[in-house]
Structures are given as C-alpha cells and as structure tokens.
Image (cartoon, rainbow, N blue to C red):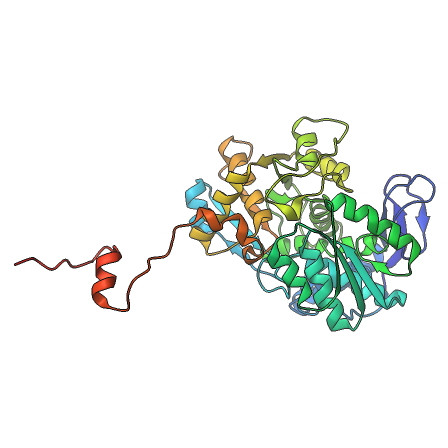
Length: 417
C-alpha cells in the first residue's frame, strides 16, 4: 500500500501527480514527495519497524514506492558505533559514528538513495538508468542496476579517483568521463535527460531518490533507542543529506516514534569547496557558487542544488557549519582509523575534522550526545593519504633481521661478549 499523495513544490507548494519530474513548471522550485502521514500513523510502529528486514526497507511506509521494493535489499541498516576511544581524544562524553562505509554493496551511503531510485524507476517502466556522479553514486548505480537488469549510463568528471572509476567499470556500465567538474557533468546530463527517455536518478527521479537518505536518520534514532541526538555533523555536497536527516527526525516526531526533536544540525565542507558552509558561517542570504579545488572530490559540487535548504535546516535547528583544509581532512582520516578502526574516504575526513573544530571552539558542548556521519569507505580514496603514512618495515625472512630492524617494547638485546 502506498502512502504517496504525489509531488509538491518546495517553494510555492503547487501539487503534482506522481511522475518522473523534478522542477515546478510555475516557479522552477524543486519538487518533493508528499505523504499521507495520517495513513502512515495507522500502520507504523516501533515494533513493526524492528520486525522488518535489516535494510532501509524496514521503513518502507515512509519511502516513496507504490508497491513493494525491487532493488536494494542489502542497502541500509549500517552500524552506529559508540566511539569511546575517539571521544576520549576529543574530550567529549557521548560520541557516535554512523558508519555508512560498512555493510553496503558499494560501501557508501549512495546505496540507500539508489535502492529507492531504481525501485521507483522500475515502477515508472524505465529500462535505462543514468546519473551524474562524483564517484560513489556511479559505483552504486553501476552495481545495483546490473543486479536489476537495467541498462545503465554513468557520467563522471574525468579526473576522478582511480578506485572509484574501477568501482564502476567492474559492473560493466556505459561509463562516460567528462572533461570538466561535477557541475559541468550535471549540466550535460540535464540536457541528455531532456532528450532521452532515461531515468536519471539525480535529475528526473531526484524527488524519489533523495528520500532514500531519510533512512540514514531513521536508523540513528532507532539505534539510539528511539531518540534523536543533540548534535549531528553531516558532510555536504549537494546538501540533500542534511535536509533528509532532519526530515527523518521530524517525521518520527510527527508519528510519535520519538519525543520532540531538539537536535542541532551542522554542515561540514572542505575549504576548497564550501559554498554552503560559507553561507551558513557568514549568515549570508546568497550562496556564491565556487570552482572546486579539494582532495574531497566526492563533495566537490560548486553549485549545490539543496544548499539553501541545508542552510535553513542548520540555522533553524540552532546548529551551524565548519570547513576543513586538505591537511585537516587527512589528519582526521588517520585519527578515525587509529582510534576506532574505521577507514573513511575524504568526505568522512571532512566531517570529523569539522566536528573536531566545532567541539574545540565550544560550539558543540562536550557533555552532549554527538553523531558524526561517515558516508564512504577509505579504500576508494587512498591517494589522499598514501603520502602521509609511515612506511612498512622491510626485513629479511629471519628472526635476526626482525630484531635488528623493528623496535618493540619487550625487545631483547643480546649482550655482547
């Protein structure tokens, strides 16, 4: 049973039937899925959710399908790690890592949104799916569309990290590397989407695709024992994840699944591409697009589609924003790995680096619950850290060589005669 009423413009509230469109034809505002929350409230409960599958589809009543899901049965329900080791280093009382680098088919949170987008694309009758991507989305569309038996075209900037290129090519999509940054790739894809009858997950399927990110927030609340944290720090590329985490908390509040939400949301971006964070930090009314220059390529969107909405959520919730330099990103990747055993990609390095700065400057109190969002696996962006790590000990295959070249606490040194 579907609880989707249709689509609604986020600016003028004009209503549309459920269809593969994403822009209001009257004011050009972005469209969002409109739900029958009264109907949902009659069928949803904590017990029903907990009895559901260990995937994002445990929340299917709050996701925009008309029928049963057909893609993404292993997407979602990733660990929420109580990060006591990291908390000790940062001097905070209660710290969690929401780790979307684990348990997903392609090791990033994009497996959530793609599960929803492809299920919806199949409902609409599309046989070809596509996307514009900074890497993780390309991996996920390539993988899940292969499983679903769909034709697939993925468009990426030509300078993407090698691991992310391989992570798409292995599924044999039509991979198109465009000479330009993500914003230029996205503009090209918008032209293609207007000409060909393809389901572009982050263009004409975007209203449905974006709803998959809500499951990230649902899981945080459920895994915390049906409550929301005081502070959430999220990375921002297009800005959608911040909005959808907030929307998920407010939906749970509306349905009586959590108490009144008093969470503060924070936007984390790299210094080399920080249009949203800069707008928030300056409390500016206008977002200035930028040309990205950062090692955090998965966040390198210079003109983010949901930037203004992310600003409204962060400031409206009493939160804020921060930015991180490339060196701070690398340091944060290493810190998370050495304390919690989690190897994050550069986006996670951005998030932790910004969280650290927000804690150190007193913006986030040290005695309140904090969730840091880790959205992708570090094996995808090894280039970022490879020149910042210690070298391995190279020895001969003998005990003598080991003892000569490797230092360790209980090393025994033979006395010389």
